Every structure is written in structure tokens, then in C-alpha cells.
Image 1: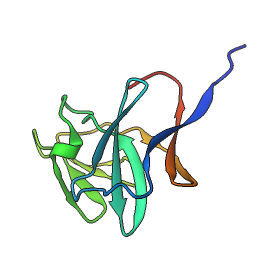
Image 2: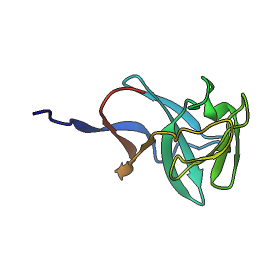
Image 3: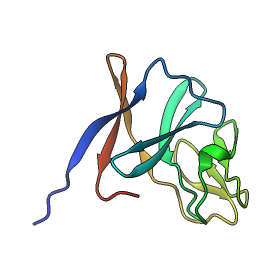
Length: 111
């Protein structure tokens, strides 16, 4: 029987400014992007699922981020691909706030 491990780890502070294109973070080998959409924070993988590119180097418009390499588009809250050539969803990560820290839930393998 396998047991899934899940941990909440600090990713940034509540006071950290989230740039219009997101905040790149690394937590235990996970490349994570923190985005602010309509005043709410979301965390996704920072790596495009089509080809290796940092999404925080891309362009954010509303609830979507466009990859800087081939302009694949992803819905930030869900990670769903919304424009080719990307066809695989981004991994999304739950966030919560404790005091002045924003914590991200890390479970499973790095990616």
C-alpha cells in the first residue's frame, strides 16, 4: 500500500509583490509560478508543458498566461491549456496563508 505524502511549505510572503507576469519560485525542486488574478493568488508549474520555457517570462492577460516560446496559452486558476501548441495542462498547487507566509502544498514527485 502506498501512502501519499503532502506538506505545506513557505513559497513567499503575503507582502511580496507579484509582478504582472507572475513570481517565479522554487520549492524542493518544483519550479512554481505564483500569479495574482483579480486579487487572488494561484500557483502553477512554471514550466510550459509543450517545451521547456518559464511561464513567468511570458505574458499574462486576465486569467491566462502565454508561454514566451511558442505562445501556448494556459488558464491560470485551473492549469488547462487554452491555445496550441500546448495540449497538456499545467500542474496547479493549492495555496494558503499563515501569518505573513504564503504556503504551497507539495505532494508527489517534483515537476
